[in-house]
Image (tube, rainbow, N blue to C red; front, side, top):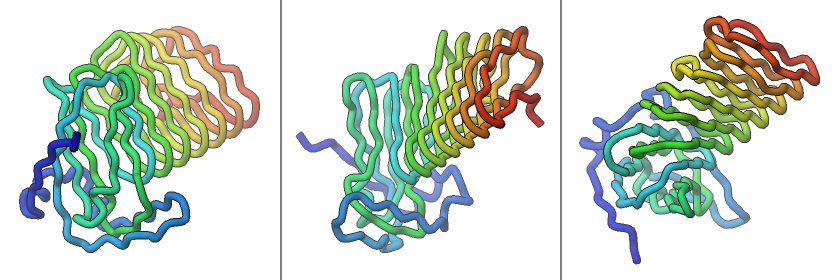
Length: 229
């Protein structure tokens, strides 16, 4: 069954922007050896009906905002000839955002997602993700690649995994405890007054806001555990 979609013209799409700096980025995404589609500059917003999910994974080079709210929703803003390449599929309990083809554009695709409850958020590739309004007993954040992930809210337990050169900034996410695993040159910033544990393999850093009750981070490489600036 084809996913129901709604189109919004460029004038209305302007009201949904969330990252002005992303408007004129030169973004190139390649999948396979097929032809690369060049964005036509005609920016539209498409809303898609989605089912229930509690996890999200974004792959590629899009800018993604995830908001904890009353009902699931999804809106994508991109070039009109590229937007069909941006997939949004639910696999089990996970919403997967991925590209289904190769493209190049001066307008980085923007995806705004609302979900009632979120257990985990993962970012793969060179994109950016911002997660807002987290409330729950636990939340797991992961980065694979060079992307940036920002998270805000409150959770009893926070887990962060960074593989590569990406950065996870959870200084606005108050956590009862935090566990961080870094492999590579990426960095993670957490805010907790409880125990901070984890491991660093490489040159990445764990930055902490406030004073954790205990710090137990195993280091293998030049990475450090320091107060956040």
